[in-house]
Image (cartoon, rainbow, N blue to C red; front, side, top):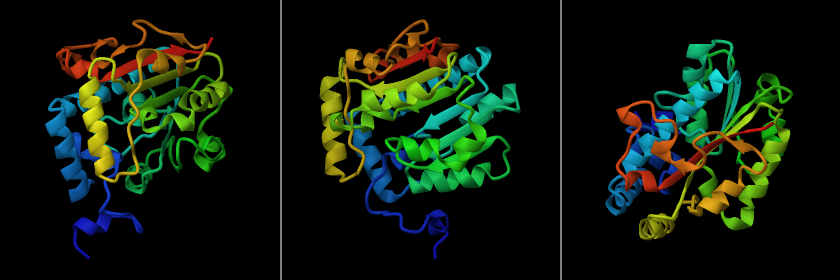
Length: 271
């Protein structure tokens, strides 16, 4: 077995791209295969700012965690957490309060395997191997039952995840099922691809992903469709905005207008 293969979980198809592994590559990670890298390079030719967009999303997630910590949230459920890289939710949260609890959920076996390896000695963390649509399995998992108290505020994160759900998966209703679990004082944070301003790029990206035979197919949505996912939660300022416009903290959080037009992001509170 080659050294590259040592970290590949049994049964993983290394001939078909996974968007979790493509994202890992775009962020500069090493847990991806040739087919993922080829797909990422194709997508970057269509949208040259793709790496910048991915980094803006990662920076947004970090700002969200710090914001929720300041609001008193001490437990997080990260849906579609992906392959671990620098600045994961638990690393940010536990710097503020080592007692914070974080559960990561992903369906990609590479993401799950590396999350389990990284977290095996980190208290207050857990990993669930599940599809985000399988709410019952997630809520009933050992990690969630042990670490998440739904009678207390929770930070629920959907970072770059919901646009992988087609309309027939009823994403707004799915998010509603998660929202219903949360106690008052909880927060929902999400980032989602939009075609409002980059319609041609998003269509071309979608065509390229379909051609790649990936099981992950993108469904960009409008401002109104994404806004509906927050239900009756109250959006915190500045509302649903471009990724770089949500409480920027410094030059690294600011983007050129084209990079900022691919995603809407927002954070909302349950009263």
